[in-house]
Structure formats: structure tokens, C-alpha cells
Amino acid sequence: MPEPIIQCENLVKIYKIKDIEVLALQGLELQIDKGELMAIIGNSGSGKSTFLNMIGGLDRPSAGKLIVDGKDLFKLSEQELVAYKRNTVGFVWQNNARNLLPYLTAWQNVQMPMLFDSAKKKKERALELLEMVGLSHRKDHRLDQMSGGEQLRVAIAIALANDPKILLADEPTGAVDAKTGAYILDMLRDINRNTDLTVVIVTHDQMLAKKVNRVVTIRDGKISSERLMKQSYRLADIGSFTEETETQDEFAVLDRAGRLQIPGEILEQMGIRGNKVRLAYEDGKIIIQPPEAE
Image (tube, rainbow, N blue to C red; front, top):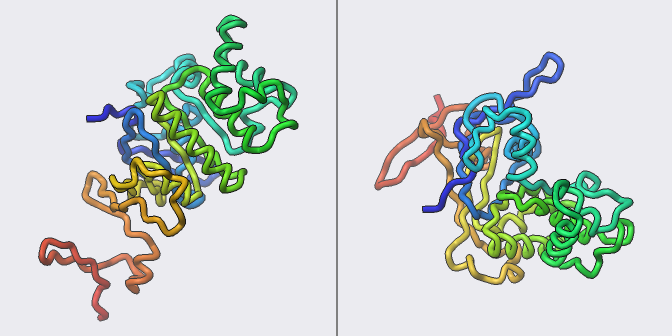
């Protein structure tokens, strides 16, 4: 069985804004296996970026259980958290300004996270990473001499500089065109296969999401459904996938109490307006029906 690298149980995050408390995560349950390439999707405010920030050590959970690479993130001291962020996770932001220094070349940017290595080792490692993302020929160029897609590839190289076990990408293709986005995903798939790196992507891009092996949907701070890639597509050329290609099967997710979330659009199609439904078990199937009119 695959070894889990991220384990969440009943994860809760509450933000306090002035006198208002906002519940960003409401008992989220999720396990991510070592070496997985997966995506998290959801509407704005669903809690997906909050979850990514907590895995990245940028935000502390309010309650529940969050263990990453054997480390209990509730119990880490500030010093241990700094070491965790430096050695366990690499982060790629949608906004390249958070990843890159504009006055440095690509080669110099990639060397920045390697604070304690010798100058020779930093240069060798930076060149190796730029070759990995297909940019060794642009190593001496600054940001204003690169396209948005090239800047994103430099940002990925920076995130990999300290050889992390998990790569976190927050809307990595949000600022590039579809062709560049497909190239970036191909590159992440190759890195995932060749290094056994765990890759977690938060995205709104449905085409990108359908090209990974597992997609988790978060609604209202909980896991609502999962989509798993069909076996017949796992080794297929993802460049041939189109909007019409159904590459994944979708499953509703039960929580520990046996509850599931039914998407609002399905309830609307069923004509359910309140908070009650009728359940029946017939021929091995659970039937959900609107309540009878009084």
C-alpha cells in the first residue's frame, strides 16, 4: 500500500476578522500518498488555499489533526517550523513576484534558497534544476527578458532547490495561456514520475484538473467529492485530452459519521429547497427524493 505523506483528520481553521469569525475549514478529512500527483479544486472561499497554506507551514490549524511527513504541525516550535518550510515543502505561487527577484538572473534566483551550500555546489544544483525545467539556455537572463511561462518554470526550479518532499502549487497556470499551462503540467508529471516527488496543485482550471490522477473537490470547508483517473487513461498522452474527454470517475466522499455533501446544482435539479430529503434503499441502491408536499 502507498505510504501517506499528508494526513488530515477533522481539520478546522477559523479566522477572526474584527468581531467576525470565519470558518474556512470545517472538519476536513484527507489523505495524500507519497509520490502522488493530485489537484484540489473548489469555488473561491471553499477553503482550498487555506488548506495549502497549512500544509506549507504558512498558517496554523485551529483544531483537528495535520501530520505531514511524520511531523505533527500542531506541535512544531517556531524554529522547527522554519526547518520544515525549508526542507519538507516547496511552494509555487501564481504571482511570480512572490517567487522571483527581478534584478537577478534565472541562475542567481535558483541559487537563493540554498543558503548553506558552497558557491560551487549552488551553481551546479541551480544549473541542474534549470535543465530539469528546460531553461538552461536562459540561465543568464533576467525576468524582464523572459515570458510568463519561462518565469513560472524558474519559480518551479526555485521551489525544488532544497530537494523538498512535497511541491505545493497555488494556481500555477492561472497567469499563462492554455498551451503553456499544458506544457507546465507535462513538466510536473515528468518530475513527479522521475523523482517520486509528491505534487499538490490548487487550481480553477478544469482541463488541468482532468489530467492528474486524483482530483479532490472542497465545498464549504469539507471534502465533497473525489475524481479518480480511469485506468485506461493513466498512461495516455495527456496532450490529446479535450474538453469532451471523460478521463475520470467521480465519487461522493463520506465523512467519518457517514455524511456526504450533495452539490447544490443537483439539489436544485431535484427541486429540493429546504434541508430535508427522503431516503430509501431499493435493489442495492440508496434513493434520494424530495420530501412529499404537505
